[in-house]
Length: 374
Ligand code: F6P
Image 1 (cartoon, rainbow, N blue to C red):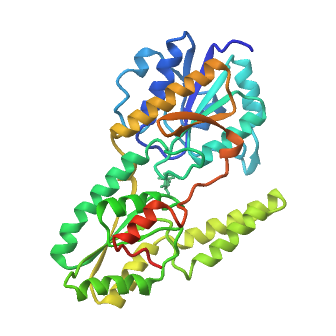
Image 2 (image 1 turned 90 degrees about the vertical axis):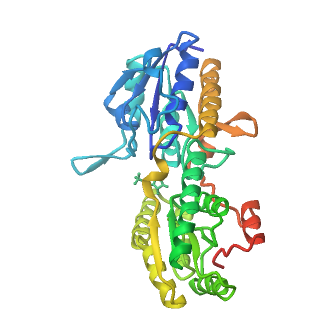
Image 3 (image 1 turned 45 degrees about the vertical axis):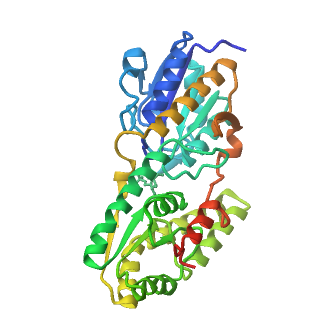
């Protein structure tokens, strides 16, 4: 095998706490064995433009505890770049350029989109290792993703804090929690924060059942309720149309069919923006209680990573450097219990990890009497 002398790192997709800890871990371990490390600016955009920064020991110092990513990020997809109205696949050109410039391998730190992008590069012959990062925790084949623990802590604290104001005003307070199309964050924060109702995309909800649960609390003398709702949660009136399109996209026989289903799906999801506000109005009508909405938004992604995320990023990042040194490429370094394992990127790309209906968190929530909307 050709010796590895120069390795690039990029961070892509939504930022999340722990990215810098991961950059530091990969960088420091590679530097310690004499490998030069460079960073690409703003995710795959930096790879397209070959915009780099040297990651020497000075650049890597003092970033362990810092939120966001020192490299910047973006959601650019190299296989679908629009130039003057035409869509181009730049993957081949990128791989040639990397070879010309003496880049021996690339580390991509990101979530679902990043893994799809990385797979295109792997298929064109680039040596890639990935690390799982997303506050949504929706990447398959890994126990944990970098950023989830911090976001979970922030969302839990928010749910905690909403209790006293809901209680004081005898209101329904709804906290909208991120998570894209998966319910891990809302479910985790809802359970940990003691929400009375938790609504997630995996369990379409019946608004009447939610109202009944709130009214039952009133009958028992508790005239406030906290609802933790995932941003992707759907009512059972909205869920079937989405499920049909998801199936169509999955069963599509051509790229064009797949794209068409994806576009329709995006449109449908866009139509559901504002769902949480509509839910609040409907619950007011059904319960005659006042309802308020708090959208936690980007607060969940901001600031310093938790100890657990720093630890996870350091574990995965150093294992990633080991893969590079040993010539193990085309893999994601995943968390598996106390250790790590490698999973082929082609398995990870496109496989979403949603909350299974019989997951222990769901069972625990039901056992403590939390309404899950169904
Ligand atoms: O994937 C992380 C995430 O924060 C999701 O929870 C959320 O739906 C999305 O990113 C928001 O994306 P953007 O940063 O592009 O607004």
